[in-house]
Image (cartoon, rainbow, N blue to C red):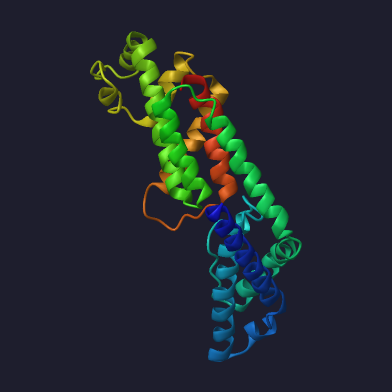
Length: 255
């Protein structure tokens, strides 16, 4: 209960901050962008700082997820670019103003509950424990960790399935594609293959369908984006979808 209450307080605080920043974005004296010399440059710099802070908090709240306008920090160095940035952020400011923070809290709770219901359907106790760590990361807004851990667990489940059910067929398909492939006899051996190639081999054997493979490739790409130091940012809606995709298509099927 304490963790939930603490999380709710954080959401309320972030919601209040987002609304404050939305007001500042809307009321920023953008006419200053066109002032000559260092004064105009100062206006542009201040608005750029405000815009990136606003984008960051909007992303953390999961607002307008997937909109290219808030995927990455925006850089404005000229009056025209700063004005365009100002205009781009106005719809986002409107969305922030319309947020019902209490409904957002309820929505987040429902998302966590849904994931835990699906988690309970995993048959293997070890797999369930591993995925539960990923869900716990999600609940605590450790987004990158949740993505990476859930993907590692999913790949391990698929490796284990191949080892138990279709290792001979897997090796035959691997050799057909790459004559230099050394026969795999353990899970570690399968780890020699690139994960994207591994998904291709599974699809060729009909272990997973074409549409499932496409979704798992997206999960792999997200894992790659989250698994290395970079400026990539993501919101919890993306993480929830990633975990749910793995739960429905890997853990509940093969776990």
